[in-house]
Length: 82
Image (cartoon, rainbow, N blue to C red; front, top):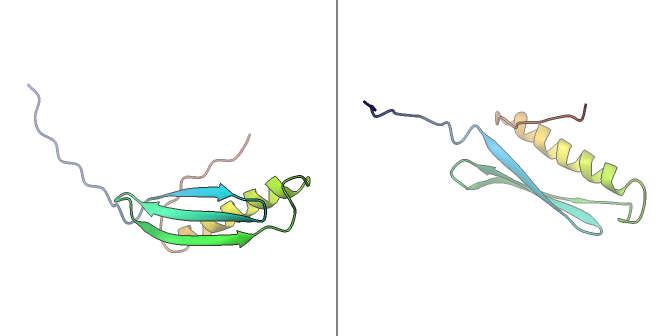
């Protein structure tokens, strides 16, 4: 017999971070489990997409944004390359 179960989510404490890269900036948005945007940031990028450091700069911008969400008591799943 299957019984009903109740699940509670802390929708305001867990977020997903999305980002879009453009030639001169990276736009980031943090979204809670209800689908509402809780923060947005656009970061100006100095190197162009053709320069070696472009993707490293994008990585730093996204990581910085995600870490700033943690300081606001949001849980942000992060993974590092092995």
